[in-house]
Amino acid sequence: MNEPMSKDPAMHAPEDAEVRAAVAAGIRRLTDWAAGFRLAGRDGADPLAPFPPGIPFRAARVIGDNLAAALAASPEPEVGRVHCQLALRGGAAECTLLSDPPSRTDRFSAALGNGIAGSWCELDEGYRLAPCHAGLYTLPALWAEAEAGGLTVAEVLACAVLAYEVTGRFARCWIFPQMTLHPHPQTAAIGGAIATTLARRSDEALTHQAVTAAATLVTVGGYEHALHGALVRNVWAAIGTANGMRAADWAECGLGGLPDGAYDVFTTLLGQAADPAALADGLGETWAIASGYHKVHACCQSTHSAVEATQAAMASLPPGRTHADVESVLLETHRPQMSNPRPGTTLAARFSFEHVLATVQVHGHAGADAFAAATLDDPAIVRLRERIRLEPYAPVRPRPLDRPARVTLTLSDGTRVTGECLSARGGPDRPFDDAQIRAKAQGITGTRHPGFVSAVEALERLEPATLAQPWSAWMSAALAR
Image (cartoon, rainbow, N blue to C red; front, side, top):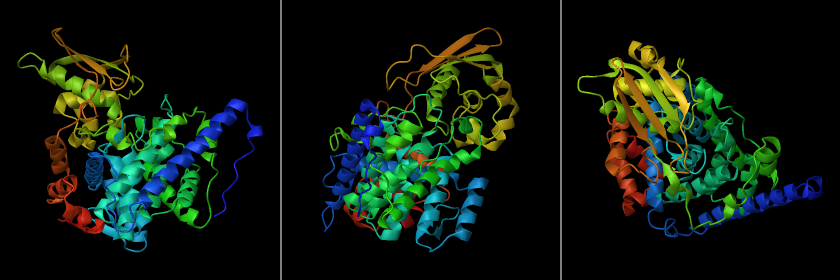
């Protein structure tokens, strides 16, 4: 396959050319490493043997968590209409679409529909070292390709680890600190491309071509869409993943990208300085999938410390007092700009600190029910939303204490109670235990897919019989009704 030539370094300032070259070299090293790692597992070798202990388990947990998050959205009316549309217009019935009930369609339609569902309820797993949901960007493509290509469960776990690594490293190379560009359209095409090439056992050259091409297929979606509840935000990750899958297809036809094309996109055009070291330093020594977080609150992860602080404050109320006695609320937060006291959609509510605090006071939790459509006009929640004031939290400390919250409730008689959370549960520093993760999955899937939790438990135990199964057989068991 002919390799496209990079642009003449003389076109750029010396320091620009140096970073540009380092980025191109880092991407080449990263994609070669991932493809070579995957290719080494052929010919009957155990695809999980090269990974350190605990890493395949992390992949199993991320898969189960993201699958549950997608299933949580299948009853949502908009998601149901999208799934129906995709099923009606789709092609060969080769993959599972996580509709209600599950159906079959072509791999691209399945990845698109499952990616939209996975994003919908804000319950998917995320990456803690950069704004990135690497599982959401990679798994819908991987699940589809695994069914269509006949991969085993063990192969899917191996591909999940490697795809997460590549995607997370791209996100760390270009961190947009102001969060004006939403991470979903920024990185999802990279995730879709690497997941697809790994599932297909593409060689190093083709993998590099697909990923460099995918870097030019990013879309630019502003974070304001989430804050104001524009539901198109919920398709960004899925569109990116599908674009990445197509990039893998086109690479097989000779259509690739420039070695330094990602630098042009993210630095030259979008203006974010690159950190080339993030791309390849420590490959095989540290693992991105070990730095993920899980969510039991159905809202933006940046609000989770505020959820816990509100719960702590409510627990400190004098006996007999309830949310009806709250006169005003002060939230000190790392992101006071996430303010929307009158969210018009359930998506806006999930990104509104006012709604998050109000619904937690009324319901006692921030699960999916706390963000149902009926909560938008609930008089008790509306009253509280209007009484919440946001101020910056100071000082904000380094990660993992970089998303803190302090909530002060003032009651009608002047009594004040305060709750504080420096780092929300779910990340590597404060992980949920197995029972909490299982309870989340059971609550989402128990009535519609009674075997889901036991199938995920077998996956997490890495049982040899489970690992040897075709991925399609495991999916069928997990989704049985």
